[in-house]
Amino acid sequence: MAWNEQLYRDIMDGLQVDKEFITEAAGAFRWDLEQGLQGSEHSSLAMLPSYIGLPTGKETGEYLTLDFGGSNVRASLIRLSGNGKFAVSRQVRKSLVSEEYNLICAEATCEKLFDFLAQVIGEAIEGNQAQTYYLGHTFSFGSKQEDINTARLIKWAKEFAVPGVEGQDINALLTAALNRAGLDNVKPVAIINDTVAVLLATAYSYPDTRIGSIYATGHNTCYMEPMPDVGRPPCVLNMESGGFSKLVPTKWDIELDEASEQPGRQRLEKMVSGRYMGMLYSQLIRELFNLSTTPELSAADMSAIMGDEAEAARIVISLLGYTNSEIVEKLRELAKAITIRSARLVAATWAGTLWHLSGQGKIEPQHIAVDGSVYQLMPHVQENVRRALYEILGDEAGGIEPVLVKDGSSVGAAIAAAVASNGQ
Ligand code: GLC
Image (cartoon, rainbow, N blue to C red; front, side, top):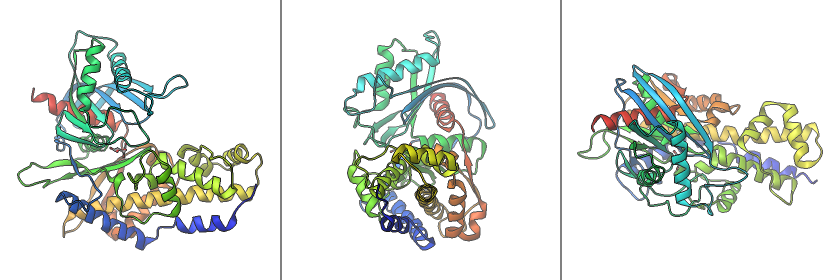
């Protein structure tokens, strides 16, 4: 199979984002954020109000949560005890895609999808219809909220394509499905984006946290805006930063975008998130070897290739039918280049957000809440995020502490349910 060495060098060059590039990216991100705050059509950031602020840390009680935003859904029972303490007493996790069914593709139906969610919730409470449960729902797609419990899906992302859901009130769909399942005792009271959930969960124990980010299958960031609008109280804004479109893409980013479910949308997400890094890697391998079909390598495969030479050789054999150490090394370097570019671009968006929060002053020391498999598991990500923050922010990066949040989506949803149900 023909290996195209010149193309390899061009790709490796194209994937470099140097200090100047990421510093400009951070500036452009801040500009878009501030334009978006003023409602300018020139911003590529949605800046969606979440109708919730940061927790006090005193929220307590037991809540039911639903985490829906990727190919797995989770329903959990979470007990909040205050002072940053919580316990997950029960958790049910199910895949929306299996050999027998696919509930997220264009052929799926809205009703089947929500009936399935209701079923997972039913399992989490073991069918108990006697007790009232307040449910916090982490729904990880860009939605326009009208209040803490009403969110209309704007557009699917992450290659979800179920018809009949865009434009709908998601918790109304869920409530209808719960009613069909006889679970009228489950009361959805809050719906939040996963970035918001992660921010709430972290701020519950680290009150200096202002930014929450998901770095996983998808990518997005939210932050606590002290002045969202004249007359509005401070509020967490979901930026839908995966939609940031002010970076110059490479020819290969453009090809990937054109082949995706929603061309033209989620341009940053398609350069940095796990779902798309795997697609980009696969597409580049096809071009480099002039293969007739595109292999289906995921970000997890990229991690394996980067992390372990023997595993890399095994994957190369499965792709090409043979292996040699030079090819293995080059494919490892390619995976690394895609991953490092991703980490540096994500860091640039965080730096732009920190600049906005600091105004003209110094950046306050603070935690940044991060959740997601890419941040947690992919080799090279965490150290390159940190390095890029230093390149952009200099010494001020020393006060910035990204923290990896576990169960952030569920704990954040429980906090939102606590805040929302106290008022009932
Ligand atoms: C996609 C969604 C966004 C979500 C992110 C991470 O970008 O549009 O709402 O936060 O994925 O799950």
